[in-house]
Length: 308
Image (cartoon, rainbow, N blue to C red; front, side):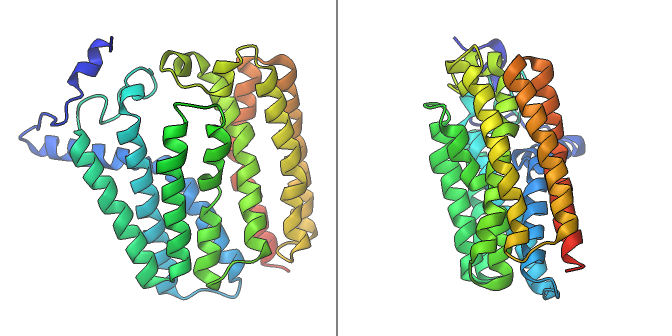
């Protein structure tokens, strides 16, 4: 039986006939795009764009890359919320999202997601290049049609979801170069491996809610947390050498190596503590540090690139 608050989630929400109501609807549509999460998408896309063109990029290419990527990322997030509307009603941290709360309907949300996605891919294809559009389309498809349905079926969804999550810097690289090469793969690898300890920590912190919603993430199917901790530590350790590879492919120098070594060591220490203690306190510390790890690493990479 669904909770009482889920009863309001109808395909056609109640509209408020006022200016405040219109603003509320606009805010809800914006919420479908998960703007805070997609800010990271833009940061990594912009980093990939800059690292592939340190001497500068044409303003139209920059604008179309950011606009197109924003639209596709927003569309993917909206599709995800359409797909997960039933499980969202069962989790405290998601039940007040626009669709499960009944403020937006399923059909209009799906059309909104489709419009954003199509507009973003078309913008990238017309304003940047077809390769960037293709990578963005691959990101959309793997996130919406592979990761999202798999999330209800297998704990492997976290690993699979790290693939589309790591593609934004590749979009940026493709936008600047019109081709893909080893440095683009290195940027992909950094974001891919970073996501695992980050999301495993989240899954541990909210394991009870995921269990109540029937989402079989690793901390749910293996409640003692041993595998969760081991995997968080394994991927944190794997991230360390991968994070040093930009220096091997000509993207960075000694200053970046020093920062990456320090950040990687701190992440490993926190992941090891989580693996040992398997406590919410240790998971939260790992999660919070992982949030600042990636912006600091990208910042060091971009800054170091200025002086190579």
